[in-house]
Image 1 (cartoon, rainbow, N blue to C red):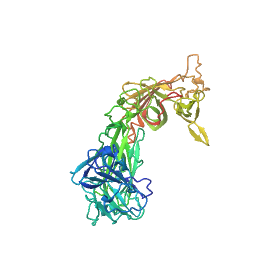
Image 2 (cartoon, helix red, strand yellow):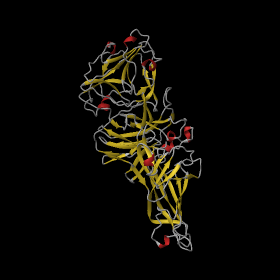
Image 3 (cartoon, helix red, strand yellow):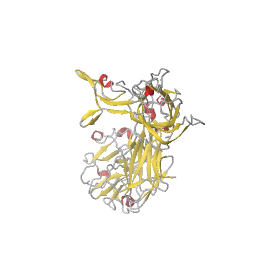
Image 4 (tube, rainbow, N blue to C red):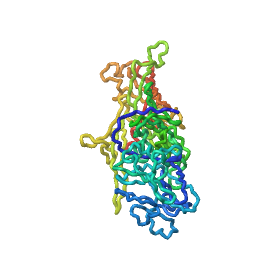
Length: 605
């Protein structure tokens, strides 16, 4: 079992505390609830799909269902569920459509994270209610100074006692707790330290004063949907706080998702490959480590830990064609002692969502957009070396310069990949026409320009950023190159797309001797006039042959999140002729970061 080293910080204000629960191994899962004859108090740990009562309860001999319609006022405790009436203001009511009371129904849909009282006929056999749905992230909103009907997702084999679970909270510790019997009577739990709770069961719990308590382990997630990476997010953070008075050994497990139920749901593309940030305190080695098996960590009493999780999109292999497929998993966090169990939904769109051949079309490239980065040269040949003048050797210090590239959406276009000297980012206002109704002809958005001349030809441009209260454009350029227009880069293998491992792209950057942007020519240098009667003198046209070879891993050995997705790179090679009588050979590495997903240039889509 691996060990995750968490970075601890003092307890601060928790902006969003969510309790995520799921008993089955899926982002889509089935919660199996055993319904006994008579009354059952149920806590739904998933959001049922479908959620309407008639469909969700089909096949069960349900007589009636009650849902607590909680109010922000003290609850008038009802000793028996049998005394509930359809007109009860604090309760929602459901009966099957054939029941004579069906016109009085007020409960039509079931919600995950809520509690329900379900009545089966007294002579009915036990039944298993298979509730298919997604994990709920609903947190408990306690009514202060009142009884609350609540439930929790707990360890199925070793759940805590009432006293153990509520001991960290002053508002609930040692307070009254009631369980529902099959006869419909609520009975008090008299031995809180000896009676264990059950996962998925609803209880009445007394809350003394205000409370936000969700359990001994407090989880803070970035979104109510859990770890949602979409098509562009790479890294997400979680916060865990141990409220109990003793240290906890936490076990992290990545669980697979079941197939989505029938309906209008995104197909399951496969599991989400996750990596966690690990810092070995002893060796001071930090790295992103794939979560391949169960992971264990020690969390001291009262401590808060920050956890960083990154998605590895290059490792996603789609099993369903089409960009609608979503990678889905669950990250389970379980206390080894059984007091807490948290499950976080994890979803991501892979590179297929950006148009790789796994989409079935093979038309667009997964790495379309504007890429800005740098090349680092650390090997240069020595032409004066009598032994091997063409062999690059280590430089005294590395030399770094900026690299700008743009990749169009259409991978069949020969000008798809461009090597650029500069780029301008502007905002293009939308346009519309009116003819009884408004028709938008151009929604507007960010545009990329290859040079300043397009500022006059592309319509409706304004700045993409604000400076001193005025809209201004963003301009990025590289001083290492002086060419005017973007240069097409050619692939040595048409079957390999830009940015994937082992793909090779090349281009030639030529600077004529009389080019005003040639940095190697001085107008007043006698050797640079090119008017010598015996022939042209140096410098002649300077030609730079550039080759970019992409690698699967960062060539510098850095374990960066998003490598192969929003960050790509590899080995840089350059051959320069025209500077001197012999050819210069340069080698190094390069790294590019996705700066914009705009695939068109100069106002074109």
